[in-house]
Length: 362
Image (cartoon, rainbow, N blue to C red; front, side, top):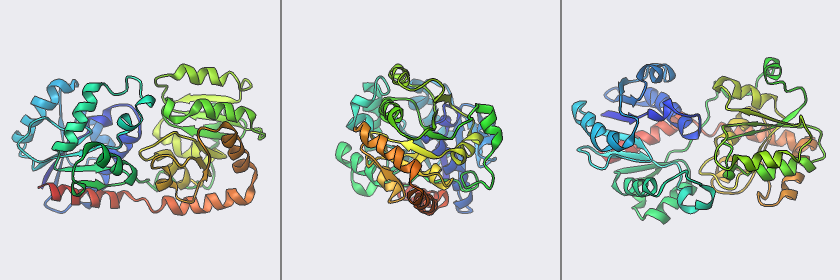
């Protein structure tokens, strides 16, 4: 089976879908059968080859504009390179001579449109709907997202495969000695609570910051992520905190993230809704207590290994922060259970389920 994978997301901004694609390709390279081949298409093949440790054959896909790439270039490459199937993220080519597989991480832009401002145009939404109905197999990362796809797109359940995100234990684990060099580099002198994710309304940062301002614990709040739409509201909420207690680090290098989890007192992730929630899993693997919500797929990820709060109630978030920082018995349980929970999510299992979906599409 010659498998084509659209990997142009690896040349873009750091986010959960990029992590999924990166780790999936690495795991597929290990789990595929002897007769299987991976053909990986990206804008920058040399950079992509370095990211995935040389897995597969690498080819350039062009142009960056999807208007020409998807309807013309990709179908042409599928034929020329004699692919057996092609795996895309969210949008598949409108016409093709081979089976198409698509990963749709979530359909929150359909179910929670108020949380997306110009994030998805009406044209993109239409194309994703059509892709789901056209694809021979639809992959998604949680039971929550699977149900939303069934409810909104009306495709047969037999064509939908839940292939969860996972965590790389070689990167995300408890460090014997948290790296003091990171404290110095980012000027993190005091103990801190960590927040990780794009700075957008869905992450609920405005309420988190206001709740943090009322918390009793004398720790700082460190925010990692790329500013996104409505970011100015986060800045306005930050004015309620004492100067110096809030640190916006922006996007950080991949290699720094495990160390920051290990250095932090807790991860605060009071999201309004998630199709998965990678930072929760990464933090638990690093032995970091997690505060989150029962929204979307987050309970599927965290199970009983997190402290849950009401994301719409700032007092609930404040109380949760105070508990997770002061209750030593709770912290010990969350650390122990979180490490065990994270160990249940493995990329090799995700790759095997993905290969099953590929074969179902042939």
